[in-house]
Length: 127
Image (cartoon, rainbow, N blue to C red; front, side, top):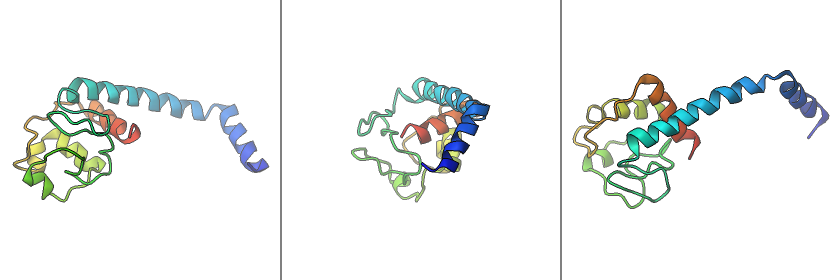
């Protein structure tokens, strides 16, 4: 590491500028994991390859829809051409049938706005 990078790193840590960022991230991710466990885990897993009633959501963020290994998706979701971006995940969590009619997920998890944001952050960061 160069001296300039070392000085910048020490300056950031020394002034405490990084601590608020870490403090903000941790509760959101913890809340996102809690939302997953409360609202999603009855049907979905966050473990790679462990499908349930619904597919594993491990690595779902940024992945093409209907591509988790070992799960049988609806023809509608397969044909959707979706990628699981923040906007598409948000729309799906609001009302799956509005985003992709005739998909297999019949019920949205009824998330508050902050819960949804934290859940999406968890799906992004944990996988």
